[in-house]
Image 1 (tube, rainbow, N blue to C red):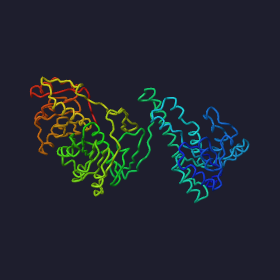
Image 2: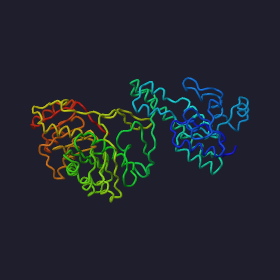
Image 3: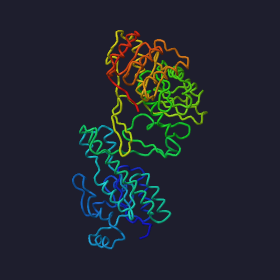
Image 4: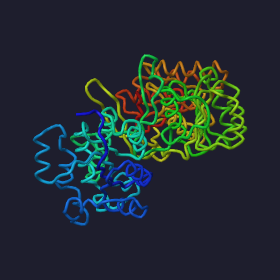
Length: 518
């Protein structure tokens, strides 16, 4: 059998009709017979493209409100029959089954139906049956049949036909791989939706799918390969971002930018976050983004060099001018003014991203972590601590100003790698200790960094992402100048820690919520 297969008969049945008419016209011009159904056939006929209804081709009418129209031997036999198998050829001739050389099918818009919040029955009706069956049949028999599942495939096939008089095996094989990926993603969306309808967060079998947005230059390190995939539903962030300037984002850029934007989304008032290696090194809430930048940068100006900046407000020209004074990898914000864009245009290597919105910190979702031989799945840490939920455990209760700084610091600590200690004053971080193997070192490092930046720790708040197992971590924070502490509580030595706080005359509250981050 020749590697090149001429397209004598094509079956086209698509829900996404972009480019449909032009594609069919090009096939007809090469002598192809077009079979089609429903809306696709109607559109082609109205455009003057000769088309044969599938029901006319098969001699079997559409039944059950269109649920059965292509699930017949004349269709699947025409797709699956091996052209180099005498037995198949004889059976096809016996049953008057004509070969079908090309199948162009894209599926009922199930994902879009779910995304718009449709009712259960409407979602069920948008589960395609005949489409996936034809796609899988054509992909299986790709030695003889080309299968197209997206309008983007049309040009590739027409180029093949123009160059060779038909489709090449290489093209058909690539299209078959794409087809199975599409049906797998479709089934994944359906199974995920069904599990959600049943309230089953962790079904017996779990499938995950994504659409490749970018092949990256390399992964976390130059010897690693990587790509960025988007999933549905999307969440405001790097997946929805428009890049206005700068070179391509790297693997580490994506990871750090996501961390920065998720952190800044925790705050309602104008807030700016600076991130380095996925850890916040400066966070501040102020009357304006410009003022927030000044305070965030002051926390750790050394680490801010080469960092990621995230805002929960539109980037304005004044703030952009300040950020541009130091080397910055990425700025991400829900929007940016024309003045800010124009000013940053001179920074050719700086990437400016706008997302169109800010993600909700309480939105449900899942996160994944790969392990050898499997992966862990958990719901996103959407926990939020309010003033009403806090329990004062010391003799002295916090003042309103201390309470505000404690809640601010605890929200930041949620986004710092464990063990995490965050010092804050006037809704700005003044010291961040991240990723240490013990909490005492995190407390000391955070204080050392802040004091090296000549920040005043007197009367500051300190937050810990998990309980203090001993009093030593708390004592290090007290020595640094903290007047109030917020921590989850729950240690078997809580009484010892509370006693140390009372001895120092500071206020301490328990959140009863931990924010480990690994």
